[in-house]
Length: 68
Image (cartoon, rainbow, N blue to C red; front, side, top):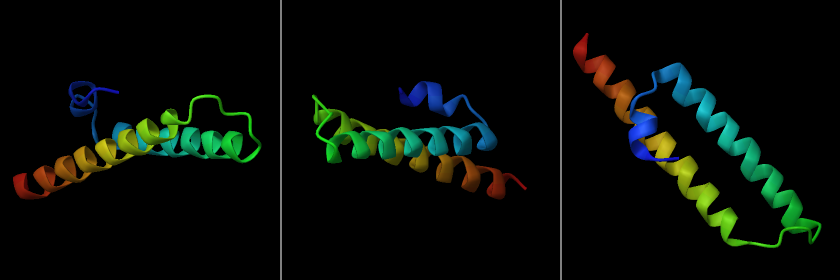
């Protein structure tokens, strides 16, 4: 997911996105463990997507706190 799409979401939307990405990453890890994953590079992209979403989530939360 692109950062521009993530920045348009609110805090609840970002938290839901992080949860969905973590669930997808878990599924990929299970596929790797059972030797069903063909493209192992998807694990790396999933981890980076999670990190990107978490970073934007923290930025959004800190911006909301400073605005109050």
